[in-house]
Length: 334
Image 1 (cartoon, one colour):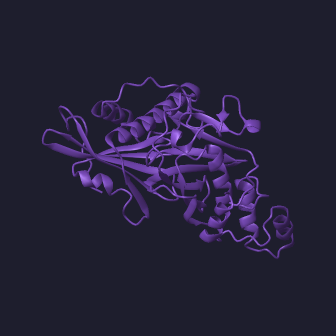
Image 2 (cartoon, rainbow, N blue to C red):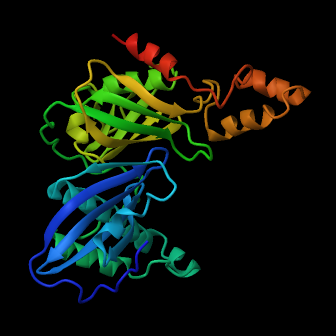
């Protein structure tokens, strides 16, 4: 990675934004938004690391290409271009999420601020400067944590129908369980739930919910207060460009979904890649799944036998994944 310069007097005058891209690893809910900022004869690279929904790091690089090298060394990285407006929109959303989270800590748990030194004390100053350079409006944060439901907003018009390549993974597991899927942007979220159920070999009748930048969406009989119906909105309403994310909850399992890139319009949903089997249906949460993995290390132990029988671990291979089997399930959706 190139040397990072201090910010205050780097750029002056009108800023031109170019070379906008989003990078991500297939099994991680972390993306890097990178672009070149040019003012007069001076150009620098800006690197914005978004972890979950929040901005985590903002850096400038004297060599613009260095902003693109953050994830490239030794990782399987997907990369897709963004328009300047898409870049601004995604940076703004991540800055808002970070500001809201910080406001929540200051208001609700101020003692947390006394427990340790902030590893990035200059991040608010950098965020404010980046807002000015990108022409983003000032923002007065609300005291909300990232997992809080966003305020319901009027849905934008959907993007022109296209294919979307999605990375989907279960959250908070040491060994990632993930799938790479291609779907149509005009699939409803109810239809996407059916696709995800097939991709992870689950009963599609289970409770499910989507958390998006425009509020929550779930099935009619399962709706949470304030949710809208998931059969009345398409995927293209709530995500429209590479890097956009949403959260999918199925029973007690949470998944993140990220658009990796736009694709040709597929005739049917398909699975391109993946790793590891989804937890057995009897595993209701991360703890029970970890118990199965531990029991499988010594399946002949009497206590482990009982545990595996209770939690659906007999014959379960956590490393198993077969793309063709997933595609067969997807084809049966009709």
